[in-house]
Image (cartoon, rainbow, N blue to C red; front, side):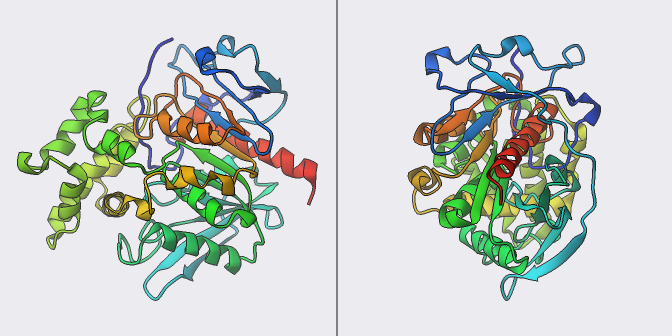
Length: 403
């Protein structure tokens, strides 16, 4: 097996050519638990109360345009005909701005079927904002697709604002948006930081969640932050790391997150912009299994970078505003009954697979599937295909169970 490496992908649009998606691939169902000793290129488990599918996919080089069917484990069984192809681009049928506090106003939009099953998309970063490609993970005939930009991100205002911007504020915003749209309950979809927020929201309001699709698991623990921002991932991307590192004087390199916090909150805007560009470029350069120049250029966009870097750093300095390092793992019992799908890349450099594995270990009802050649990005063909398939599987469950 050829090893390929991938980092964080905060950009939520489809950067890869859609022609490379496999249009006739089938969803793979794993009916029983395989012990760790049998983990190879693919791994899956399933349990009783809930369903969690963790999938790790990627794309091949030009000479490997199809998934490696031969790598399927003997225990896997396919569900014929399930769609894995992202849906065609669509436009929103309604958009709006919702004032969620005296200071903050969030942008929201709806697309798909106005009478369909509601699903809310939680973007990554935090601070990354939404993109039109996010709508394509969902069947527009079945789903009522809700996207919104979290506080300070995307089209929400004030831009890049850190005041009154915490995980718990965002959870309240999600509830305010649900009530504003008169939605009794909905499916929740989130990747990277979006998976963090999706877990926190679902654990706070489990009765409002009909299903979960989680990608690139990020539990916002110290070891995860240290891995990506304090030199761990530099072992894989030393060239990209140097630019990130060299902005900080040697005397302040004991904690890069704190050193960047100082600069991202400087009274001098050019100091903020310089730090934001370096922070964002580090993530963008590690965002795909193979370099994606379009994504890397996002690090040069001062407006995007400022929100992305400032908000992300703000949450990391404050440890996600969680009361303990293992908070999300400690509260799994609250969502154990919810049908969920986790899509996770083995070579995810920014959100290493250890977090998805740790989540599975405390959630034994999980169905876990690992694909050998994918990393973090939702936009790579294999990952996107499995996100579509995850929504299709939850759609089938909803259709089977009825209203």
